[in-house]
Image 1 (spheres, rainbow, N blue to C red):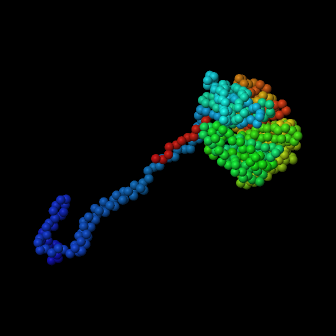
Image 2 (tube, rainbow, N blue to C red):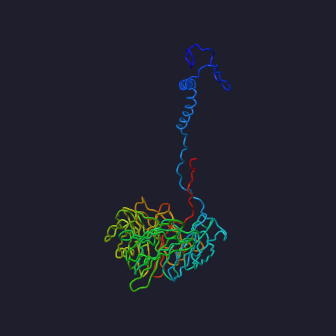
Image 3 (cartoon, rainbow, N blue to C red):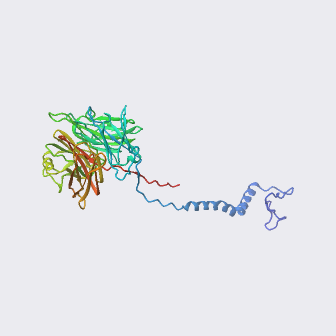
Amino acid sequence: MNAAGGHRGKRAAPRRRRSGGAEPTPRPEGTPRPDRPRGSVRGSVRGSARRGPAVLLAVVLPLVTLGAGLLVTPDAPEPAPAAAPTATTLAEQTLVCPPPPTGAAAPVVVGRDAPDAPDASAADRAVLLEGIGEDPVSETLEVPALGTVGPVVASDDAAAVRAEGDTAAGLLAGRFGDDAVNGTSCEPTAADQWFTGLGAGPERSSVIELVNPAAGDAVADVTLLGPDGPLDVPDVAGVTVPAGERVSLDLGALTPTGDELAARVQVVRGRVAASVLDTATPIGGTDVAEWLPRQAEPATTSLLPGLVGGEGQRTLVVANPGDAATQVEVDVLTPTGAVRPTDVRTLQVPAGGVETVALSTQLQTQADQGAGGVLLRSEAPVTASLRGLVREDLTYAVPVAPASSGAAVLPVGESRVLVTAEPDADSPTTATVVGRDADGEEVISEDVEVVPGGLGEVTLPEDAASVAVSTDGEVSSAVVVLRGEGNVVLPLRPAVTEALVAQVRPGLP
C-alpha cells in the first residue's frame, strides 16, 4: 500500500470533502507522514485539477470583459458646424486722436454716423473727450445720432473719445489743425497697423506715436523696412506703453537715414493706437507737417484715392513685407477707368524692401484732367502711400480697403469726395454720397456711378460737417478738403455700429 493513499479504488474510508468550517479527518496513530515534497506536489496538482476551471473563469472572465469594454468606444458627439461670429449691440467704443505737432493747436471734432439709431435724450448722447497724459482734462459732449460737435479744443497731447451704450454706435472723430493745413481721423486701437513712406533724415522726418487708452500696460513691436530689407533697430522692439500714456519714437534720432521707410506696429499685449506725424522741410520754405494714415494690411490690389492737383512733387512709396521680390504695376484712376502712364515703369520691389518712384510729371497733368488716385496691382501683397508736396503743403493718399460704406467728420473747407471701384468688378457700381451739417440734417445726397477701375466725384457744400458713402457693392473712397492753399486727405472707412461675438462650443467631457 502506498503511504500516500494505498491502491487506487480501494480506500479504507471515504475521504471527506472540506467545506466551509468542517474539521479535517484525523490521521490514525502510527500512520507514517507522507513525504513532504511528494505530497506537496501531488496536492498541488490535484488542487489545480479541481479548482482550475473556476480559477480560470474567475481570473480570465474579468480580463475579457475589461478588454471588450476597452474595445467598445462610445459614440463621439458630432462636432458642431463652425459658426461665424454673430453681430450684437455695440456696448462701448474708444477712438484715439494723436497728439498735434509741437506748438500747434489741433481741435477735435466728434460725430456719429448711426442712421438706424433711435432719437435719444441728451443723457444718452454723452461722449467723453479725455486727454491722454499726466494731467488729462475731460469734457462731456452731447452728440446726436447723425450730427457733429466741435471743433473742441483738447489738450496739446493725445486724446481719447469714449462712448458707451447707444452712443457708441457709429462714433466718429477727427483732429484738424487750427492754423496749419493738416488733419486726420481718430482711429480705434488695432493689433496690426502699417505705415509706408516714413522719413528719418534732415529734409523729412517721422515720429511714430503709440497711445494706450486702456487701464493696463501695453507692449508693441515695431518693424522697420528700408530699401534693402528690414532694419536692425533694437529700440523699437518690445516697447512698453504705460496705461493712459503715450510713447514717441523719433526715427530721425533712432535710425537716421535719407531712405524711404515703412513701419509695421504689432501689439503684443494690451491695446495701442499708432499714428505717424510726418514733417517735411521744403528747400527755402518752412516746415509743414501731416499725419500719415495707416493701412490695415498688405494687399495685391490697392486703390489709393486722394490725388491732389497742382504743381509740386509726388512720390509713390511701395513696401514688400514678403520673403520674395515682387513686381508692382502702376495705373492712374480716371473717370473712364484705369490708365497706364507711358513713362511709369513696373516697380521691382525686393523681399522685405521698399521701392520709391517719382510721379510728379505724369500725375500733375492727369490730376488737372480729372484723375483722382492711383491703382496698384502686384504679385504679392504690398503696402503703399502716395505723397504729395504741392503748393508747399504735405498730403498723403493711402490704400483704402473696398467696403460697402465709409464715413468721416470734416474740417472747415471745400470738400470733394472721390469714389473708386476695383478693376475686376463685373459691372459699374453706384454709390450714394450723403453730406450732413452739424445738426445731422442732409445738405446733399447724390448718387455717383463708378466703372471698374474708374473714379466718381461729388462736391460737398461748405456747411457739410460729415460725409457718408454707401453702396450695395464695394467701393474705396476718400475726401479731399481744400483749406486755403493746402489740402487735407481723409480715407473714408466704415463707422463701427456693431460688435462681433465669437461662437463658443462646449468641449468634450
